Length: 417
Image (cartoon, rainbow, N blue to C red):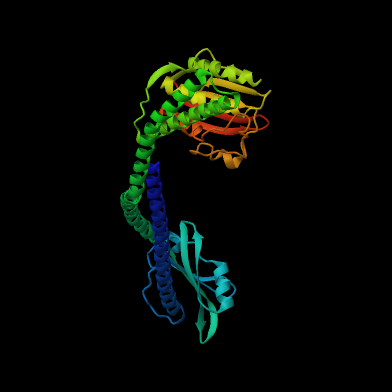
């Protein structure tokens, strides 16, 4: 349990750190992309101004579009007709120019407009600005640059950030594991002290409890008691047996928590164990007029501990008998899966609400509102918790569910032998 808590703390810490890294990486890439875009716009604006002077003033300024497939320009009149363009566009490509929409927008707003468009070879950044002569707008010039180089630069940045992020996440995992280990250390020490106390107290209480039971049985055997006293002694004996069962469960829980419970790993026939337990609980079921029906194939080859599996099945059948009303039924089914053998125990009792269903395997939890205990005496709240721990100790599991109109169903799954 504490180890799971440690890993949960570690994964939570690493998850938060990963989210922070993702956010920072996205912010870094987005900021870098924005800065590159601003630089592109500044460069294209300067190129468009130089080309405007070349066209209107007859200057011969050198522009980047000359002989480059990465750049291109085009000049339009106010009606949107092409009046001039990059001489190399016929051989190197136009990059999708002209863009009539951007030209109309620039004319309408009377100022520079920048945008990214989709060209024949990919995304292109375009600056579209009015050309003015003597203060009059005589046309529009559009200057464009392919964004392939920008995208490659961003990709290189991502390739640099990715291993850094993975390294940071790995360091966060190691650091989180170390810090989580330190955080749960006090809880681990407290838990160990509690486990040792439960084991020692349960062991020490068994001896006086055995003596009390022996003395009470001797008093009953003598037959010198009146009827009222005999009932009191019988009640004391019943409570002594109940206390003995609780102490046995506590000792088992302590061994399970300490990992000191011996669990065999051998092939066995689950059908034989199930038949034995069903026969034992069949007497109790018949006494309460409960029909116990068992259907299993000839063999259920399982792998694990036959004795511990018998304990699990005893808990399931005891639970079903206690919570099934008189005149009801219990259906036990066994079947083979691909890698598992499965036994289900279904009763016709009141079932369990979803609130209690999620906690039915918690230790000392008793779902009084969901399962009436008054009919056959209450449990300790340890049976199902121990049963699931025993199933998991064998590499299997124990689950609970409600079947509509039929009550509760408990499913035991073990590795197939």
